[in-house]
Length: 156
Image (cartoon, rainbow, N blue to C red; front, top):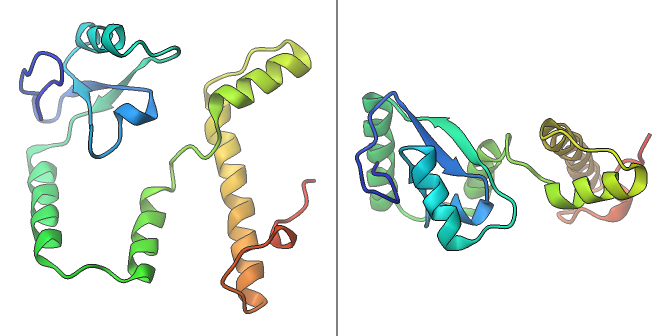
């Protein structure tokens, strides 16, 4: 991988930085930076309202080679079925944030005047994930392929 700002090659098993804004971390854009200074130059150009640099471990040489091999094989393989795609995306989204952090922070600030820790998003996402899993099971038990509002368990 190369730095998206200065194009310096990032070392294997090192550290790099990513932008906290989700549009900068999509597979198509995949912006990575060698230092916080390069990330800061990116923020100046894109004018993000609220963002921060996230420190990330660069993959090892073996892991990077394995990822390239997986990509090569997936390009040669036929398109996956809907069920296979759903199971593959489910494992990738197990640590993904499912709530709009800015909305949660503003709600808490308006209701109480309190600040919100960044770790709240992960905890709320896990809570939402458990509720969604329960709703999926309820819809499946009812023989439906659509999750309805009545499948969602009530808040405690």
